[in-house]
Image: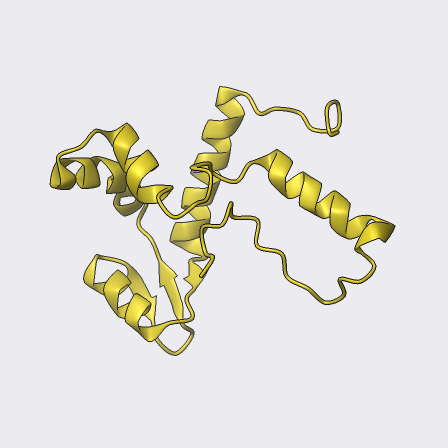
Length: 129
């Protein structure tokens, strides 16, 4: 469906994207909608502003998560990704650019006319309850 419409990122592009994400996490931070999560992030080394409900992440804190979990759980880094990070997805997959692009195309198409003011979570079921 989307072949030719989306360019697959090179390894260099992926590195640039990764580094840009780390910069955003460090300089802009994330809005966090739960006090308990803000407290947990503070306890683990994040800078937190309770009034703004925002947390900033040191890149080193982000980068060490998978290796530390592997050591703590006595499993490989691949197993951390598969059995911890992707555990709650229905298909064991990260969301891809293609997944997001298909959702955007659906929302832009006339077929989605009954969906107005909706939010779409493109997560492979990661946050389903």
